Every structure is written in C-alpha cells, then in structure tokens.
Image (cartoon, rainbow, N blue to C red):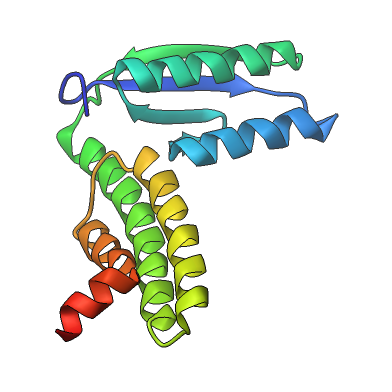
Length: 160
C-alpha cells in the first residue's frame, strides 16, 4: 500500500477550541483514517496518493473552520523512530481485530438470525478497520476467519 518505504505524509494543524464541533469532526476523521499521533497537532500516515488526498481534504476542513494546516511529505531521520510509529499503528489495529474476534467467537452460540445480524455488523466493522490498516497484524486473518465462520453455509461445512 505504501508508495515508497519510509515516506510519510504529515498534517500539522491548529484548530480553534471554540466552537468545538469542527475540532471534534476533524478528530473523528483522523481517527477513522488511523493516523499516528506524533505530537499535539501533528499526525502521520504512510505516504501514498490516497493518504495524501485524505489529509489534504482534512487540511481544507481545518482552514475552513478558521484554523491553520499544512501537509508535508517526510522521511524519519532514524529507522527506530519509524518502527515505533509503525508498531503503535499495528498495535491499535491488533486491538480492534481482537475485539472483532472476541465478538465473533461469542456469537457462535447465538441463534442463526442473531448470528447473521452480528456477522453483517462485524463485516462492516472489518471493512472500516481495513481502511486504516496500513501494517496488517496476524490478528487480521484470525478475525476475518471468525467472522466468515458465522455464516450458516460455512458452519454446516465444518460440521459435515
């Protein structure tokens, strides 16, 4: 997914505290993208056309709300620093996949209509997580298998 190893797109921003609605909207958008928080008002994503475009749009939203924002392309000065950021991003996704896995495992005992409802909900959640999963952890595959196992056709294949 990365355009070039070691290249990151950074968003440096300041947004007025009041009114709080634009600040909260920006925070939610950044969270949905799965940014790495490098400092106050400084976030990063692995650089590619999609991540650059998303941060450009958020920068426009910030300026429209009366704030200031700049988008930068950068390379970490030390490999260890980049590893720390990558690990933090992977750990965040691991926690999300682990939660999906736990919910899917609990749903296996549910009646079929409820299990199907939970499966649809978890598939949607997996799609949201995938969009911000730049460094997929092993838990991704386990969560996907657990959600797939909730489907009645899959369950009947396993018992056959």
